[in-house]
Figure: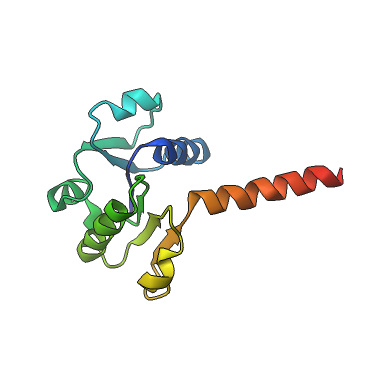
Length: 142
């Protein structure tokens, strides 16, 4: 029941830091092509691991033990890479909750976003805008 985070760029790093802040004992496997990404992030946790490899490669996903993961997040800056890797992850583990970052959220309409209850698409821009708008509006009321 561990979590796999693929892509430790700006979004992935922020997600990882927040996940570990909220649950320092979370079992997380980070998949990224940068060999020293965990050290660069400056985070540590007893169950934090790094798989150095390409998230689109089946052998990398298998090394991250996707088959037994409860949640898999694809947070790279490439919609195409995220979609391809998510497709492979779902083949390896059709029961996992799979979260796919899409910069172009309108693609979900073409992809049939509601086709699988465990497949979730999100736009970091949309989520950030909603949260910021809420904060701005609540601050304006005070």
